[in-house]
Amino acid sequence: MTDWLPLSPAERSVAIEVLVHGPLSRTELARRLNLSQGSLTRLTKPLIESGLLVEAPWAGAPEARQGRPSQPLDVVAESRSFLGFKITEEMVYGVVTNLRSDIVARLDRPLTSHDPEYVADLVATMTAELAGRHPAVAGLGIGVGGFVRAHAVVGESPYLRWRDVPRADRVRRRTGLPVVVENDVAALVEAETWFGAGRGLDRFVVLTIGAGIGYGLVLGGRRVPYAEEDRGFGLHWIIDPRGPLTPQGERGSAVSLLTVPSIRYQVRAATGRDASYEEILAAAAGEPMAARVIGEAGRALGILLAQISNFAMPQKILLAGEGVGLMDVAGDTVWDAVRAHRHPLAAPIRLETKVSDFHDWARGAAVLAIQVLVLGGAGG
Image 1 (spheres, helix red, strand yellow):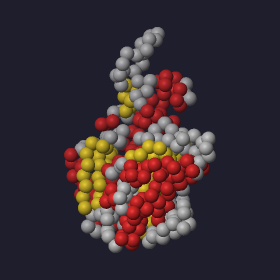
Image 2 (tube, helix red, strand yellow):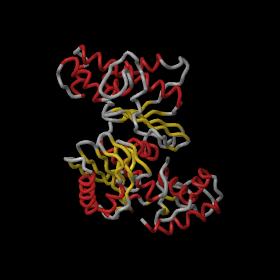
Image 3 (tube, rainbow, N blue to C red):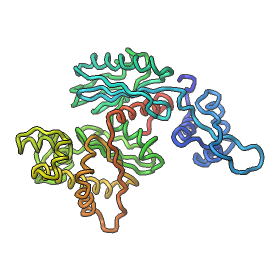
Image 4 (cartoon, rainbow, N blue to C red):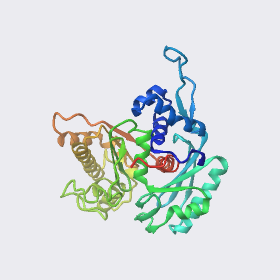
């Protein structure tokens, strides 16, 4: 990796454009970055000499032009591997990706202790196993549900019960690799902005529902960081002041109405029966209590989507997380609530749903590693 570094800001812009949108002809690349051909040649020469960029063969017949047509520029996606880890309360999910974040391998291990040293040892063991099978590992990223400072320190993680844990330093000392740590939702937003649903969009939102509520806003093609990141988005976003009161979140908040634990809690409190989220969704067609809880959740989701659209005006909203199955069961209710809380002439919400598993979140952490370790800076 070190033969690519350091990249100047201008070189970094060229590398990112090719990485995300390539292969690109030199003419198209110069147009996208508003560069002269001479400036582009000066910037791409060291990138080609270092092996980060290559001249790619034409996918089809090049358009007719005078003289010898130049070949498009591309990256060699397999030239480096990156590891991504998503740490949950019960598991560590690991992936190996190439330079374009395509997942090429997975490895999961149960998490039997939240002790920071034990978790660092487990990540190091998984790193050794994955790196042994996939050489040229350039670095790794770790995503956690919590507040992270400076891509290195977990300031607070309620799920792991961590506070001020220097996660990057502990894993780096054990693996010898560069390490980036980030809030898991922020990592997912970066991955979707560069390589997924938000690619090429100026205004884009990621909303996740699962164990909690996650939110990420992209403006001008860049994720907007904010001080409250993962410190309770949705806990105080009141959707129905007369709604349910659950152990997490204010009465009628997005968290109390929408998260998987809150939905399970409501059904258990009313029936005395402990049912899984999938069982509750399946029962919503026939059982009155399940139908009421899922119906309220559907209306809450519709109101939340409408409010986000009214204020952020995104070109697209990606709805992701393990709670996305709600759309399959209560989709009509969701859209009825959206229409009720939007202007009649408002443009339709462009919504994409993604039933993501934890490997997608681990991939997000790998993308953060690509951004920070290779290209010298994240989208935020």
